[in-house]
Length: 204
Image (cartoon, rainbow, N blue to C red; front, side, top):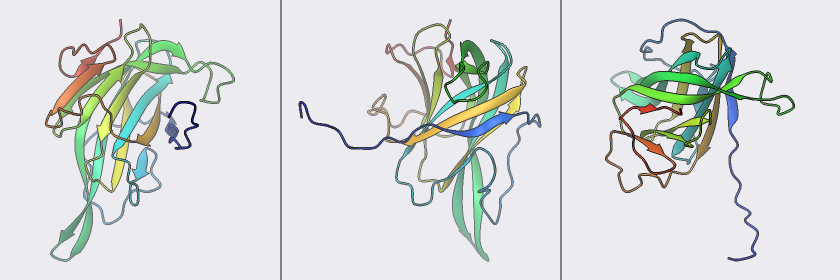
């Protein structure tokens, strides 16, 4: 309604991995009898009705440094002797830092830390993983994940040529981009509507 004030709240992006220097190669995780609730990068989705997670990456030290990531969705599974929590790796890939810094006084972290301007999805075995970005040099790339009725989601990182990794995440409603294309296994969507080579979003 014109002139009306919208009261719907929007979930902020939250820093879920802060300056991680973890450098153990990412591998599939084991089935567990408890969720890793206190682990950096884990988000408890029990009682959460937002179907989408959006992720921005950052880190150190210089532009064009790289970080590796994996996305796990956790599910509760009933077995012969009770229940277990099963992590399913739905995507892995590489992010590349751009030249856009957090800047002093923004409360995001160290002023010199850099946002990632490129996200590459190297492998995906499930639908609903998309990359979004403005078509501007050194703009901020964003990964969008369909949570697929999971009870938990976990972002894991290790270091490529970068020195530390930051991850910011936001729960929200499903994107309108590609809404009519729900069966797509993987798609990269630029704001301008140009669909580049599958799996890579590179800002020149």
